[in-house]
Amino acid sequence: MVVHLVGAGPGDPELITLKAVKALEKAEVVIYDRLANEEILKHAPNAKLIYVGKKAGEHYKTQEEINEILVNEAKTYDEVVRLKGGDPFVFGRGGEEVLALHEEGISVDMIPGVTSAIGVPTTAGLPVTHRGVATSFTIVTGHEDPTKKEKQVKWDYTADTIIVLMGIGQIKENTQEMMKYRDPKTPVCIIENGTTPKERIVIGTLDNISEKDINTPAILIVGNVVDVYQKMKN
Ligand SMILES: C[S@@+](CC[C@H](N)C(=O)[O-])C[C@H]1O[C@@H](n2cnc3c(N)ncnc32)[C@H](O)[C@@H]1O
Image (tube, rainbow, N blue to C red):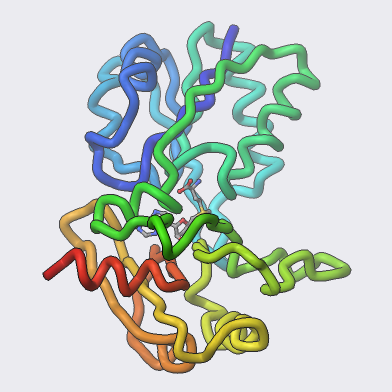
């Protein structure tokens, strides 16, 4: 028994690794999330499919329930794939699943994925670093667990580019916090449904982006690389 913890990439079903496709082809069970493009499942035509996707605020399965399903399936089948959107270890709770499986003596094979944090801007033509403009980037969650006693996200990051995942629900609060440390006119780019036919790009600045109409999933890219992106488009 082995569980392959597989990154499905950011949305475009072709942005999956060859190694992931090979694991899917021999899978007996695939346990997958909402964000993983379902077209990817065609690589596992004979597998039992278990959907455990979650939506913000409306949990279909708790993380504990998902861990339990993983353990039970791994004890029943030899080849189990756990498919997660983007990369399993970038805000994917992959680490918790590995710990739960190890506790039961089940081995895990890690197969990384293209994270939306970088794959979405790159596909749109927005470089997260650029010579003379940005030498560093930070990837941060815009939605911290509200039950945490103390906030870990302080928004005082020194990186040139800030990439915010899960940042739409609290965009007003988050941009206000960022403006304590950055010029309110800092350019911001939002990419909705990146790498898919539904991709939509909205440009603004820290002081006005929260007024725009945005759908999810979306990421925010904050910093002068957004100006570089605008120039590269022309
Ligand atoms: C729970 S996190 C999972 C991230 C994933 N593990 C990864 O590496 O991309 C979900 C967030 O990723 C971002 N996201 C995922 N897919 C996206 C896409 N196709 N376009 C824009 N943002 C996306 C959004 O910010 C969304 O709220």
